[in-house]
Image (tube, rainbow, N blue to C red; front, side):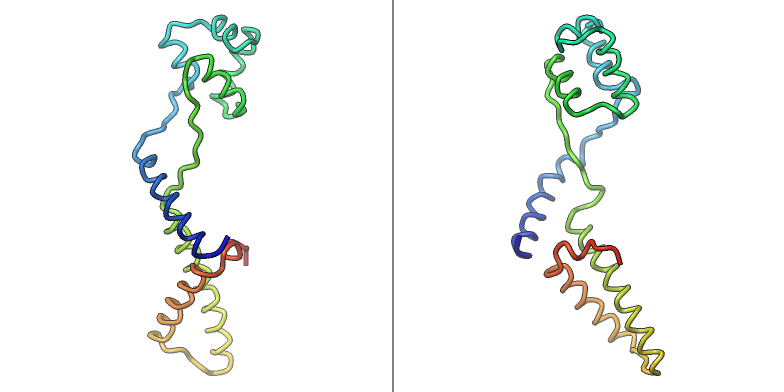
Length: 154
């Protein structure tokens, strides 16, 4: 994907994710499946019948949700049995644009630090204002052109 297209896609995805950041998705302590099942007045035997598994498997599914070991397929089947929609999303803690800019800034600072060290060894210091200008220019360049290389570990 071209850098311009990637930036556009990032902005569009950020807009979609912004609305999700407003919701509080804290799972009930006993899990969504059990909380909804109990609120509906449904037994684990009844849930198991609706999923098409043994009652012990329905209990295991509820336990797996609480422990975090449940599969998406099991969640999907349980949601369908409870007449619910499974919503699966990764919601970044900050905007994707900010994440890219933060990473570009970190990479740029590391590169400038390396260059500064080399220049100091050669007895050639860098003026602070020049260094800030170079940092800004390098961050812009990294955001616009580096693509996946931005995420390579140093």
